[in-house]
Length: 235
Image 1 (cartoon, rainbow, N blue to C red):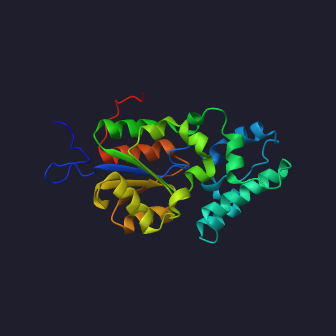
Image 2 (image 1 turned 60 degrees about the horizontal axis):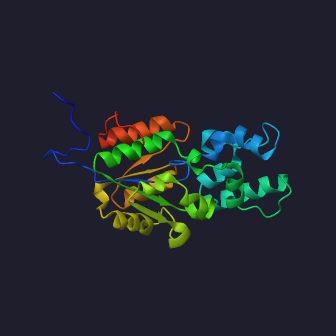
Image 3 (image 1 turned 120 degrees about the horizontal axis):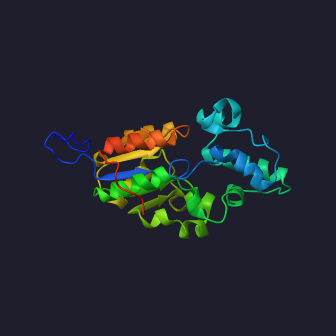
């Protein structure tokens, strides 16, 4: 007998119709995971970028302030970008400048393989897939987005760069659900910020917290919750 499909409800019907993902740190490999590589790219001495955010909050007082709600995530990255810019003689660096300097020539290198695998499996299973981000274009830029293969594989993108509505505002989730054409109770949401996870739950979605310290395990939990198999390869 085959194991029960985690997507199936009591009547044997699929529980979820859509997967809704955050982009930064969830779909994309976080800055924190590549700090030694970032230092080499920027010509900084090893250990200069000692702040590791959620990978090791003890190293990052500014991240702890953001997690406590004292500053926004946009504030966090604005401060970090300006800090790194000053090290390099650039007085007015923005997050777009910083991320542009470290991401390399191929935008697709910034995407987690486990994210690609999960999206491919979700679509193969007939689920709709969307991305809801607070600052995708603001931080990464339009040229990056135009070359990002993953964005051609999803059904909906809602970016607060243009809407002006940031998670955990309920309107951000509702806009994404409307774009996907699904009800809140039929979508599984994934984010690395606890407040955004709670915001999704408040509008009726099931939500999974994404642990940046364990990206493979986090996406494995997503696939398990959706009842996805393990045999679908990425293109």
